[in-house]
Image 1 (spheres, rainbow, N blue to C red):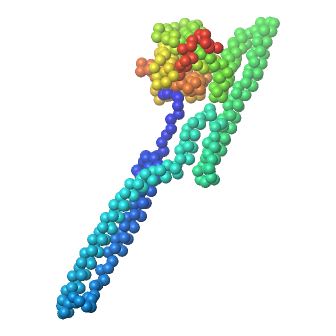
Image 2 (cartoon, rainbow, N blue to C red):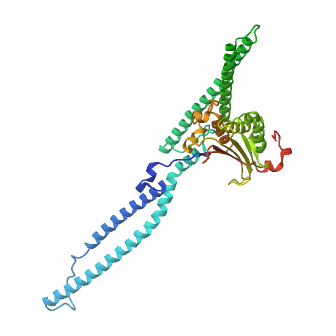
Image 3 (tube, helix red, strand yellow):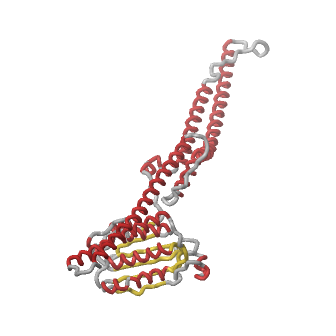
Length: 419
């Protein structure tokens, strides 16, 4: 399961019958259909009127030279003239209908272009709104559509969306501020409790074994709560996008430092660190504190939820990818362990999601480790991919954009370089 750019779901109505295609195409088809119906009706009326022309008109014989001498000859002449007139009328009507049909066909073709143009003009404000809405994410809720124009239905819709974005921004800010403030304020009583515990144990006189054991357990729980609050602070900071310590960092050094800092835990659990490719040209640009936390969390996750006597593999690669600024860099951490369900593995990047006691082992961990990793990686425009290994364990792949020209200039050209 990958965490990165948001995916958009298509509505059910967009997959049903005549509703397929874009609204512009449907409007164009509607315009052309209405034009053809009106043109066909007009053509039918023309045909009816033309068919009832001068069929009743008669040519009366004239007086004077050439007048037939008998009534029979006059009647024959009249019939002949009526036939000629009827033929001329039919020919004229046919020509009118053919010309009208040709004109209708030409106008039908022209109406397709006109309908497409008019539909585009009508839907243009909606396209602008759609593009602006897609650019707005949880980190840019301060942006607004700000659609101008007359106060019509489209303007009302844009204003309604802007109001909704304003309410969402306020809600997000309140939530993040509460988490940050609560985490910060709770540290004071924790510090007081830890100090009181130390004072109680440091008093003169013997301390009973029960009291010492209880104090040790309380200290462990206080440390766990302190780590949980620290995780809350990191998560809130990431969601705020507060990167005050950005710099050029070597991804291989972050991974190796995280492994070295947990050497005792690795030895205590009898784990073997596999020698995988480590590319020393894998540079990234971002917050030093947060990206170090990413490396620490994925290594901690691989150690804590591993089998005794298992193994850990760390791979750092640079190059490739689809980005035009130098590709991507990747950190891959694999570990042994029990066989996991891929559908449940996808939930590990959500806060407080764990795969039960079989994965949490002795109960260590708050369920925030990989969710913090996912938030930090998304804030750095990267992706997090979690995969259950077929023979057991987990494969964590972190992909970040390559810094491009910044890396080419080398460490001496940058400030705040971690190497």
